[in-house]
Amino acid sequence: MAQSVTGPEIERLIQLLSKLPGLGPRSARRAALHLIKKKDELLVPLAKAMDVAVEAIVVCSTCGSIDTSDPCAICKDPRRDASTIVVVEDVADLWALERAAVINARYHVLGGALSPLDGIGPDDLGISRLVARVAAGGVDEVILAVNATVEGQTTAHFIMDQLAGMNVKVSRLAHGVPVGGELDYLDEGTLSAAMKSRRPF
Ligand SMILES: [Zn+2]
Image (cartoon, rainbow, N blue to C red; front, side):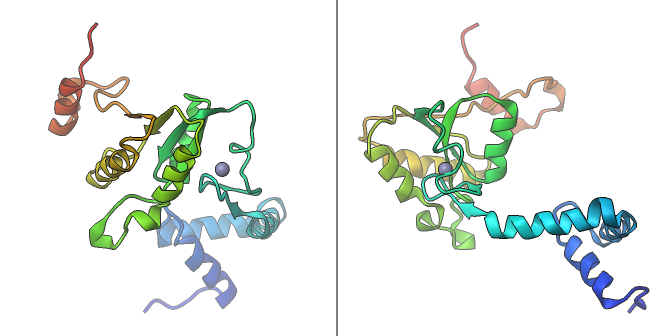
């Protein structure tokens, strides 16, 4: 085993940083060193911001998103179209849609996708909470903005079944050629989905 060159406090920092997505042990060491060198501008404010975040973070009991208030900022925003609910797997997906500013609706965050092999069932995803929101009325459309993976599509079908017979339109995101995409580079699954979901020009 390689000999440690720093004290246990710094080793611990590196070890924790290496658990972040996209950071391996090597980049975690670089990040730790950068933080330490920029102690006053970066390390101290970051530590404080993390402390504050730990205290403030709550999960919205309506939509399942993460915010510092319950209901979250989106759920209590009267300018949002409450008649449309966009269902996403993860908070990251919600943030991506918000960054793109593509829809001014409310959301429902599942926190994952159905995956029997991993033991993730409907009860783990708050799907009954979604059904209850629709049953409460005032919702015209549910948009299934789940991932184009087997798990995502299984989840979409399950939700569609749960909402069947309720007076609500259920739609899902189109699958196909990405903006700026060249056909020659697309995989067969994407090409096939694009061909199937072709539209009149
Ligand atoms: Zn919310």
